[in-house]
Amino acid sequence: MRRAQLIAAAAITAIASLGLIGEQIYLTLKARLAGVLMERALAATFEDGRSHRPWPGADFAPLARIELPRQEEELTILSGAGGGSLAFGVGHVTGTTAPGRVGRCALAGHRDGSFRVLAELALGDIVQLHTPKSTRRYRVTGRSVVDENESWVIDEMLGDGLSLITCWPFGRLLPGTKRYVVFCEPLSGVVPDGFEEAGLKLAKLGTGDKLAALTGRLSARDENPAQSGSCSRRQYESARTRSGRSGDSRGVHSARSRESGTQ
Image (cartoon, rainbow, N blue to C red; front, top):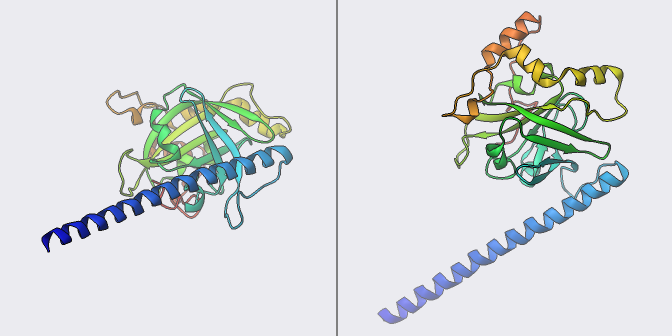
């Protein structure tokens, strides 16, 4: 009787293990298929400049590609920063400037997924953004850890550039209220064709100069890389007051820029 029970238990364990292995294989194949379909949709967008959904029923479409040369990473940028898009790539935060255009473009991603690479970005690193109409090059100029309700990190007042956002700290599984933000400014002389004169003037100013003028720079702290080149909300709000603009109470996790639980 005892022997029969052991054999039955072993059989159940084996079947359960096979089920888990099968599920893992299924998820892996699904992810690879999704990647192929998104690449095809992005290639079609680069070909004709129109939006193409990767599969029927998808609530997002590939917009552009972000490239990190030193980290040897290329990531697809998808429309919106909801759960659907963030499950498959980097999401463009709705309400911010579209990728490739002059202005403040905010991109969000999961800290245990597409944007885990943000932990490796250092000051001075190059970031390239490819769209159907242009390729723009940026460099990393600052990094900050902020509360999820701090909207200044995606404010147009920061000027032309990128705000790359993920949850903080890295390596944690549970959702948190902190966000890790990498600021990037466009390299001088690299501006896409076809923009209005006002946009060109904005681009020539350089985000780094604006960020320094608005907020000041905190000294680098070797014990916490997230503080290097960072700035505080108090400094930013002070600059906004001096410039005659009131603060915005909405944050990077508000209706304007909700990341649907970015991890």
